[in-house]
Each structure stands twice: as C-alpha cells, then as structure tokens.
Image (cartoon, rainbow, N blue to C red; front, side):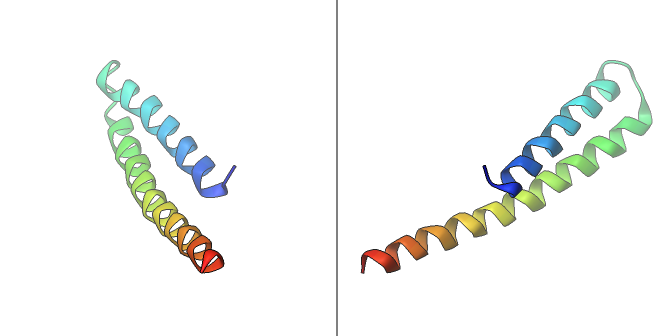
Length: 64
C-alpha cells in the first residue's frame, strides 16, 4: 500500500482518539491535538490526490 495512504490512516486514527478524549471525557488539550490531526489528514489528502493524478496521467501516456 502507498505510504501516503498509510500515513493518512494513522492521522485519522489519531483524530478519532483525540476527538473522543475531547468530546466524551472533556479533555481540553485533546481538542488541539484533534485539530492538528485533521490538518495532517488534509495535507496528506492533497498529496495523495496529486499522486493519483500523476499515476493516472502516466497510464494515459503509456496507452497513447
């Protein structure tokens, strides 16, 4: 599997864990960590989109 995909999964898991700490247990510091994890997911998603587009274009060039 792709490194970016795996990193995105880990960041999402971190978000879920920290969000639960904030929402259920009321740990205020967890809110910042949850937001940080979401920002990481956003960055990784943009990077993965770019990788997918490059791979798609490379396949199109091979067929041409």
